[in-house]
Image (tube, rainbow, N blue to C red; front, side, top):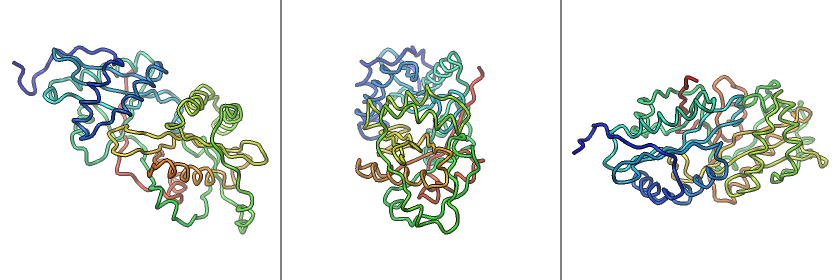
Length: 338
């Protein structure tokens, strides 16, 4: 007989489509509700883009005992190198404390090293003591970034403040240059607001051009994958472009997290935002966020979230002026030795 706290010889393998019922059952026991649609979407996404997903199962004599799901971060939040975003981890009742979580993370870390990935990121609410303890045991530390979120009702009711000035290249990872309007030009700015519409596949070339002009890097592969995702699953990707005189002058890439990190309700995450440097003083960033908020409210998504590096104080101020506040979630990172 195996006693609580003793090690078990778990078999680790890739998570498969047939594991869906067991994963849903374990997750429901942990969360107190079924998230079948979310788990099904995650498994489907892994099959569609296997190079961007790492998902493993821990098995014992009774079958599936636990799981871990992660996704490759390519250019989100201004990243210049790939990382892993840990989204789900869980163990069946009666198997916790027996080494299954550690074995799953070890296999995930090995997968990351083989693929040239240097770090793993995740978030957790500061009240989740069990998860915080596990993250500590796995070697995670607080990341040098803040998680910000906005309740859409509160954000919609805020009076807009004057935008902050950001030097070129000081947006999330360098991809946003909002700029501030010149003095006494509020009326001109109101009349000059860009048209904001859903992102389309034909927008890719201009989005890549804008991103390259701001970051100085060619992130065409990352952007192409996110645009394709927006076309394939509009319920998950809620991305927009801003146009002026028919030309694209800015974009925002956002996704609806329908269960990541044990969330109880859907949350939209802004992971990339770009404004053409020639239009950075014309409230393009604000217009994109305002339309994003309106679209999310229509989808009955009530919160939107983003992450900002702790060194980017002007960007923190910009988001706060647009209704964002410090989240109850904390950002964590774990360095991998490659």
